[in-house]
Length: 372
Image (tube, rainbow, N blue to C red; front, side, top):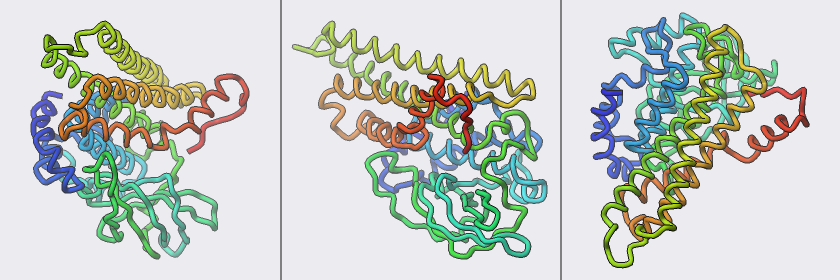
């Protein structure tokens, strides 16, 4: 965390340029890599740090506090890199992660929610598809992506060098502009068996307890940390702005209405953080016992992420209202406001997930289970 405090000024200083570029610039990327932050998701037996869920949340929150796009890019890269290291066998892991502590390891981008097609062939698969949201791909050496093998009915994750995909420069968006979350295309691309694993696996081949969560729950850890970091930064920016405005004629920050609104926003953010830490403390205890999460725990994990995301969105709305025209102008508040409202659109915090949580918690789907 001290190392991240040291690179935070670099992330902040480059945030505007990164937006213009549509990716993290070389100085930002080097600062993150030199901090060894990407090791948090890599299994310990391959040389990584293998942080616990709560440690990952706090790490992502700290980076996202400095810059939301840098935090988003980081969370995606460290998760995909770490899970690839955990779920591939020794042959592939040895090639991708030959000397992690010495800085020789793959950085992997890509996504797994939209399936391409896969055809089984001798020694591997041939995959075809057009995928979205390769967040952080400008820093990546490899891509992981999902495809369905129609012969077996299996949804699988494939890993391959980034240069073997066709990157589509189409990231023209309102927020999270610097994440380089572009599309990519593969056409009849061969991927060896050693670089393939089942999308819903909860059986790591490297690493310990955290990787028994599976990809969906690992993603929930990341998005929780991102939202908490962004919410904290927005409230702190409002606090700094209020200090500048107080005492001026007719200052809105010198009203009881503002005092109450700020207090409510602070409570929302702190409650979301407390809920997240409570849920993950319970989950960690279960994993430490060698068990998998129960359906109730998985439900609460998804509910907590939804609550965190939309609590932070409400915090952002409060800040935007009371910052008045200061939030309209180019600067930290405007950028974080745009980035926040891009982040809320992620499928993991969407209405369908919330509905399914409610259905199970209300006792109306007692036999249901969460499947990736």
